Image (tube, rainbow, N blue to C red; front, side):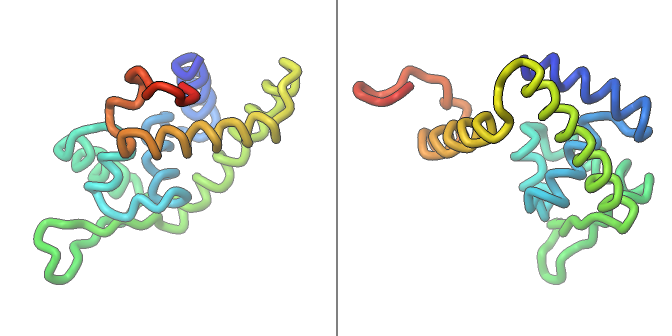
Length: 145
């Protein structure tokens, strides 16, 4: 289901916003989720440091992102959205959320209930294995998973 939703978001964003979903997601992570360094962004997106470096360079060249070296931080880049990047995230993030809410409602799934369950699942995943790749390993006896 996640893969299908990602593909649908990619088709929609490419057609209407002129950006791919992976690039939009990176901007969203920086603007709305607090991924303020390249390392944090790479971890949240599940991609390598060299891959995130290329992505950050492209987003900066497109005028959506600023990557500035931190004083005394070595090669550590601090990330922030430009005004155009922030507008992109706000406008199209809101549009994607509205479309997703309509999809859920059309399937008889109340959006607020879905949000509550999703947040609960995320908290559970974060508390198990510290958010590592072991998240879907068999749960300990007596746990919910």
